[in-house]
Length: 124
Image (cartoon, rainbow, N blue to C red; front, side, top):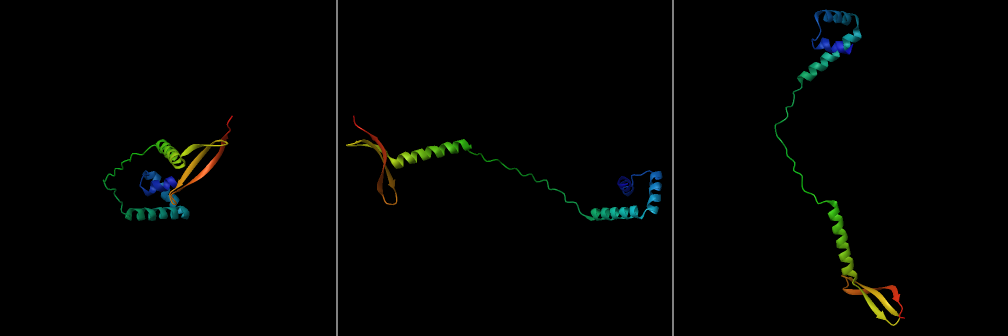
């Protein structure tokens, strides 16, 4: 029935189809109400002005990016350099053997703190 309503509304019926449909409209108040709603909607839509798009073209250029693998490797290298430079590991020989000592410089106090790793190599 909806197809018949649309065909009638847009004038796409033959004369015999149109006559038959108008006979149905006269006998069916629900169908007549649907047709009047569609006609009202069509009038509303015809009053709306169509917005025409402008012919402006927008070009977005992609910015080159550094692959994440480079950033990760650079972060690892910087961490290793900071660790070696900051700890400055060295071996001290004592009476009981060799001890690996690392001096960590704190920039706030400008003094060295020594942390001793208990790796002692006993003399033979």
